[in-house]
Length: 324
Image (tube, rainbow, N blue to C red; front, side, top):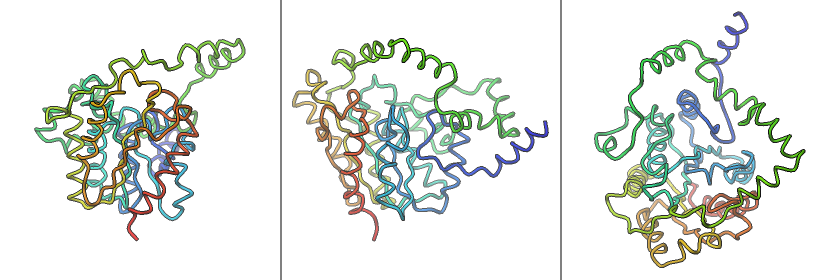
């Protein structure tokens, strides 16, 4: 009990400073992390798993690679898997409400997230949703697919978490100490490598066009599209707050997806997305065709080399937008 009390006491003073958000970050962790940024002027990366660095070590994600190019300016990577325009909008509002005014915002716009079938189309990350609940308007509650009201069991869990810090940050600490995998997963990977089944698994999971059927919606964007609505709200918020911004359309693997997006309608949709962000303080790049085929892991996630190229492309655009 004494050891638990000492650990819990230490967690009251914990100051998280990760290269990126944990894969399974909690609402409490996000509160603590944003609280540590209060009063600072970081470069903030927002967006989805492409900017987070899907299937890559944190240090190989583009945001991390850019830190040595901006040694005097802190870079914070608040992107995550399941990001979308709604998530970017509310993360930015949460930062501003918490007293964090970015010196520069960098975010990606992924055309696949304008598809109502996409899992992130109208959903916020559950931890972000819990933290921004007071910021949700009646309009937001109509547009978004929100979590159901807390059950009695969840209320009890919240009560325990309020008084027991170790329990509150259990998911975040586990990942910080042991990574995203568990012992069983590590043992499974070792056995697969030893038996050669890892190669068979990799072959089975190799991206093929049929796996992305229905991923991209080519219908024109209108006011009924939730993702597009929040993209326009991002632009309005950035304009109102006069925050320097670099936005880019997510690179897409056209060699893999040519059967689905190799049509004029796709290009017209990208133009709509870019036009929605045209503001004096926002620089927008259409990088949809900017990567080689071998720099993709799948339809849009990038390899280490792809992240290096993305960092190289972002650096001059960021310097041009940073206040002098």
